[in-house]
Amino acid sequence: MRFERALRKASLSVLALGAVLTFAVAAQAAEKTVKYNLANGANSTPIKPVANKPVFVMGDQTTAGNVGSGEMTVVNSNPGDGELVWSALESDGGGPSAGFSPTPGTHILFIDFGHCVDLEVNDASSFVVHNACGIQQTGSVTLTW
Image (cartoon, rainbow, N blue to C red; front, top):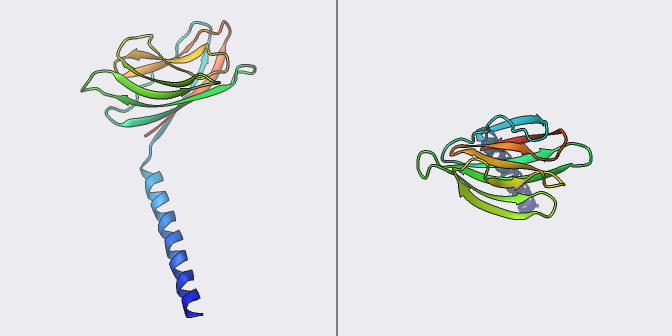
């Protein structure tokens, strides 16, 4: 009986500690969501990850018939190497993608089913959503760091 009581107290203590740590970590995370509604050939406004920190990016394409998602971890290495550095997983069977570039228009990853909406390098410290689908596309990009 005494052992069971001690075990129960220890279990509750571990659960409480886990909850406190979860909230402490969540309280330190920052998040930014950018919504887009793009005509064919258009780019979103530039999206700039914070500098010199890994940023998790989720792209969510919501246009009916072309729904999809993709994700990446990106580092804005400015100052430093002066470029974006990423590792990613593209939408709908596109597979893994990784690279680095400061060059505008460089493909990073597709975030839609049809592989015509992608994230592209805008400059050495930002990227854009680009629509090459032929029709208007909508969705959002969420950054967490």
